[in-house]
Image (cartoon, rainbow over all chains, first blue to last red; front, side, top):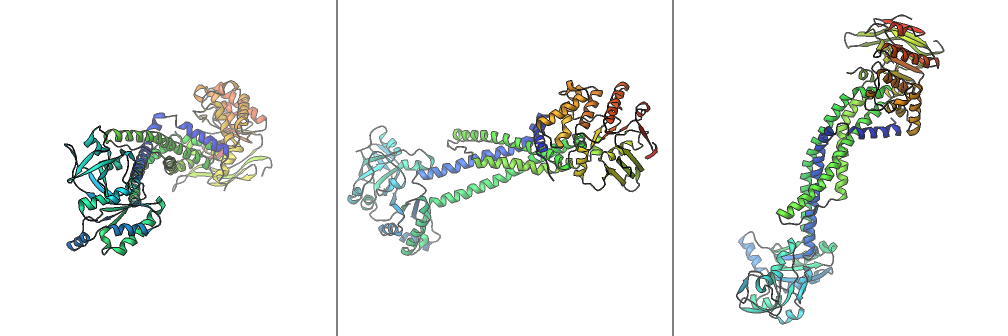
Length: 412
Length: 225
């Protein structure tokens, strides 16, 4: 079966012209495809925007290269609980972990201490963390004014602290906090540094932090070494899984009950996020597919009507020499151009809809989610719309191709 | 077999209906030579149109042999039949059968599209035949802007644009007034004089009288000619 290029060109042209003969009919027919494709594009855009935002936020609080080693919170039974309570994260663990891998960039212990901080007659319920000089680097958090904790602060267990922006607003309002003394647990700590405000979703909690040298917390407050967590930063993203495995081995070698220690890395968070967004895309994709099938049925319906209406025309074409394949292509191209037009309309309104959704999320949910339309999404949309046209145009086109010219010319 | 015959029918039958078969054509044997100007006449329902459709390769006879230009038509594929319709046969209908949404020029270009002729060459050839049928001034008009006679002339132009050996006209004057009808027959006669084999159907005796040969069909059989 061979179709000459002239016939091919004319069939394409005719398919395109056919769209504009009954504009309203065309518009109604393609609306199903357009809605399906628009939903696909908008949801893919917002989905991708959400994913990107979460990953960006994670990277901004110390990159995705951070691994956290911590004691498991809720144990199963009393015996477990006893074991865990006996279990501690100590200086030995710190040393062990820092030697566990050559791919570690920095390592930082953290002790959470609950309680209220005071300045003059003001108080603030923040989070007091005992940590070391690397915490800022691990969380990718810079000093705005003053300085961060130093090795010397730790060695001397000095009574100093570094505070987040929210602590400053609550205790000092517009005053310069540097040099002021805040009260915590019957002790005084001089503010030496103010950190930059974190104004993105996943980093805001940092603004409530009051950071003390970890030795100061051990010696003056808790009286013992029991880290809440140890943060480890790998030298680069790609080493995270390796470092994590090495840490796990090291932990298992030292702890009686390895289950009492949990190791988190954001790679896992990102992986499960990817899985969740895959799942979302999959379930949304199936709904879209249903809409597209409904749209396809609409196209098939119109094409069947069109074949019947144009029976005589098909007869004329055949009488002057059109082959079955020529007629087949004429009608298939028409179905394809219908669904492609629907697809294009869908892409345009999908992009617009996605932007609107993004705007609505910003306005009503106070959350910045961009609508990111990838070329992949657009290509997928074009592919799907053409595909639907082919699938649902196949039967009507075959029906048209098989019209008997002799009968068609006497058709009323 | 007549050596100069372009059309040779041997015992052609055409039946329709499943169990109780109805004959539309019964044992038709005909030989039509090159350049003949033949009229087929007969009452309504006698099978004239069926015969024309078989001659035009739009219908395959139930039985019998059809030699067109000394080649058997039976057993050809649908696409070979389309090829024959495109290159060897021109068809003119009683109700014109022009594409309503295409201009006269586009209608005439249609067979050339299926012959694979493109662009300027196609347009030039279509203009040429439209001039020949006297419609040079009406090329961009759509069928609904043309009179019956003009429509039929566009149809003739379309039928002859691919220079077929045979022109088949099924009651070409049926929807036209007498004067216009006569002009159409005169045009066909002129084409016959140029060597085209022309077969036309008419039940108007005056039109039939113009032919150099007439074939009469009654009740699915040839009774004279």
